[in-house]
Length: 343
Image 1: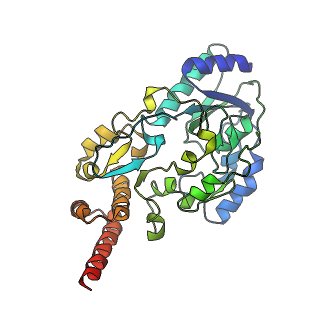
Image 2: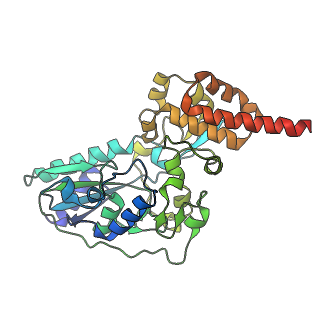
Image 3: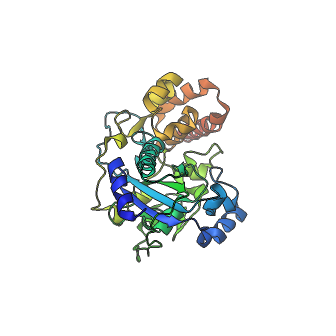
């Protein structure tokens, strides 16, 4: 299949970017993955077997081509300003769960290709073992920014990535694009936890990771999370490469139900069924209500407003072990505040 046909089909199903690479191993990053594993900075969300992270044929034995797609989620929306006690949501969790959106579009692409020639395939939307950013880099979707995001000249870095392994040959693209970050280090300087160095990320310090892990978050790192309830856009928001790029006009990524924020009071008081109804369709709901409440407790601690004490008491009534540590932190802070007033 030639690239012009693939581009045509991709446009028909609503895919913004598409490139193709071969099925050879991603040898360029093998040493770095080994280093991360040996240094203990690999996260629980990553495939532990390095061969499966870099070799498409470990996943699909007869793979000949890897189709990499990108969909922009860079939507404009004025966040709800009426919520009294609110936490922030990453743009990645504003609208419909992007895993579903990506899967639908890639399934549509495969259906179009299959009308021309018989193919076997596997589809992954941010859930596969292979390093999708490296596939995107190798295929030419974009180049690596210093914040480790893939940056497209046309769309910037607010891009969801997915890939399709297939046993048919498709014309390859030129990849391994040279970074255009130059001397800029705005993302590195802006990162609240210092998780970034040039082109490297300590994932376990990244706020996006912290809002998802079930591990206990240290007071030091929690204190740098601000009011972020799910995800973090800081390094992308300050990036000059996201200025003046094409915006996404698709409604599926607009935060129609949430207004782009978490209503912390509502979240703490709502039932599980109410949670599913309002937040169940967003990508940030995958970790469940308890983790989002944990993040909300951290946000309340960081706000440090005495009038929020009633919300802490509501959480305390739930008697959920994962939340107890953060309730204690609030109470310790309250005791210290009262002690200083008495002195």
